[in-house]
Image (tube, helix red, strand yellow):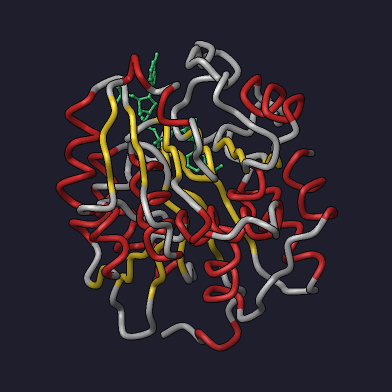
Length: 279
Ligand code: NAP
């Protein structure tokens, strides 16, 4: 029998590949800042080993873990309890290993997205007008769910593969309007918020080629891509006089509820947190 009370809590991130993840720097920064004796470890795990690894981790002292590509959907099948928002989004990014042995799966991406937006664009009012969302992948589902929750009256969505956007519309309902990818520029006209959820603009990926003439001073524009921090979308929006919010803050804010659940302290996202994640 182990003395679980004396154990140093362990957490980490599971994915494959995992070397690029910024989560270890981030959580280690908070552990150090708050003087918590715990560890956060990156773990490259193959799909075939996923369930066995997850079922073994609690006995090793793990209190939970983050989950990233390609396991965000598969962990939903393994978990014993899945939150409604993770079910709606169709993916989980946070697991909590409960004392009763159950694995609890949640998705905090939407929370992180919205908190980042509130922090970076405090004047943005969700009810002030339509949101234009570029992309309909996994991250877009979290963004759409959080925007609907926040009270955005209309969400316009365009995706290269139209059927994925249509799937979002059928899952999330009447406030969503699907545009053709070639007309994505049109949906920006008179939008209060523009969000890029595609991987375009990221280092090593293609450029986002959507026409941006519809951007106007006062609009809020945010990009989920955070490498580079200032994407071409954000640079163009800044020139026009839009309020811009980079994607790094979403990564930082989505980690807050997980850190609190695992280590018992709600961390603050500040400039030192950003610096730690960028290190
Ligand atoms: P995903 O499920 O693979 O979706 C990728 C999206 O990008 C899809 O909408 C896809 O369109 C679109 N796309 C990719 N290549 C394209 C191209 N050449 N032309 C047009 N569209 C293209 O990925 P995800 O998980 O949603 O992540 C999307 C981005 O968000 C990634 O860059 C990721 O790093 C970032 N992200 C950031 C955070 C954060 O904390 N800041 C959190 C989550 C994700 P199709 O459907 O047509 O393929």
